[in-house]
Structures are given as structure tokens and as C-alpha cells.
Image (cartoon, rainbow, N blue to C red):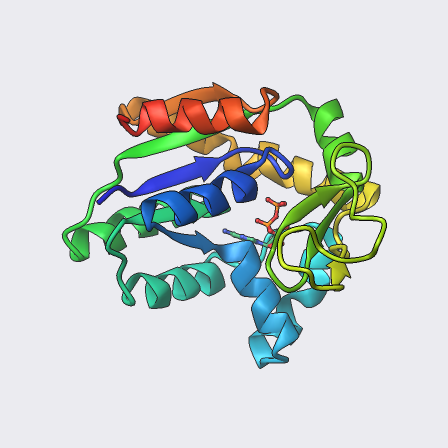
Length: 215
Ligand code: ADP
């Protein structure tokens, strides 16, 4: 069982790599962004409360995301957990450490995916996903099939996130540099930081992660 954090700015490729690890290693992906979007889609009070904050690109409160993670951790995972988009602040990192130790679990690695800002803008503004299976597309590098059907599941439900526009992205990046990037030093000091080049191909990044996980 392996527990890891995937860290990196929006668009670094965390979700893409997490999906692969779920399929190949039986790990459970805990993406606070996905959980918050699900809460919005199902119209819960909390979902309504965070919608505007997310569309703007700001962070929602620590209390909300820590609550979501606590709930999901209790469901357990045989292969281990991938934390994707969490923790994003120092209080969230402290809370995670406490939750894991209460459950007798530990973090095996924190993987930082490094990508420069210009590449992020290009990646994010062209991004779409399949609303049915979650396959990720990009207008320039992997366009949504011309027949309108997802190449992975055949569904016709192409989606774009309301915060995948240049204005929100600037706010998201600012939030990342101000509040999340200090975690890189924090985990470096704890001796479990691993860095990789997020500009490499999807396959190369997969290989780097496999190497870090000791395969
Ligand atoms: P990104 O592609 O920017 O990494 P995510 O899907 O992880 O996006 O998150 C989308 C939005 O959800 C964030 O901009 C933020 O508003 C909110 N969010 C997700 N995770 C957290 C978190 N751990 N703490 C606070 N806000 C979060």
C-alpha cells in the first residue's frame, strides 16, 4: 500500500497521472477539486456555497476540504491513496498528517510536477473532459473526436470547466504560489519530496512516477 501526494500548479497533469495510477495500482484518487464539483452538481448547500469561489479561482476554506478528505479516508483503500489537489495550504498539510497518523497510515512520497506558467496557460485554456468517463482532451494536442463521441467510452458529453479560462487561471496560479508552493519546502524538509519534469510526455511522466514508487 502506497500513499502519495501529487503536487503542482493547475494544469500540471496531476489528474491524468492519478487516473493511470488508479487503473494500474488499485489506488484511490482523492481529488478535492472533483469532490467539490460533485457537491456543486448534486446541489448540496456546501456545493452552492463554494461555486462562486471556485469559478473565480480562489481556494475554499480549509475546514470544508479537510472534512471532505476525512470522510473519504474512512472508506479505506487497498492500494493506497493519491492526494490530488490536497493539501493546498499548510493547515491542510498539518491536518492530513494528523488524519493519517490516527489511521496508522503514512505518506510514502510527495511528487512535485514542475511546469512553467506559459505551458500551463496553453494546457488549461484548451482543456475539456468527458463528462461520462473523465477522459481528458486538449484542443491542440488531443482534440475531442470529430464524430462527437468520446474515444474512451463512446459518450457524447464533452465538458469544459467554468474556471478553465485565462482570468480564473491567473487567480488559481496566484493562489498556488502564495498558499500552496510553501508546502514544497515543508515536504522537502520532511525528506519525502520528489520532483519531476511535468513538461515531459504523459508516458515519460508515468515512468518517472513508477520509478519513484519503486517499480
Ligand atoms: P486545478 O486544476 O486548478 O488543480 P482542482 O480541480 O484541483 O483544480 O480544483 C479546482 C478548485 O477547487 C480550486 O481552484 C479551488 O477553488 C477548489 N479546491 C480544490 N481543492 C482545494 C483545496 N485543497 N483547498 C481549497 N480549495 C480547493
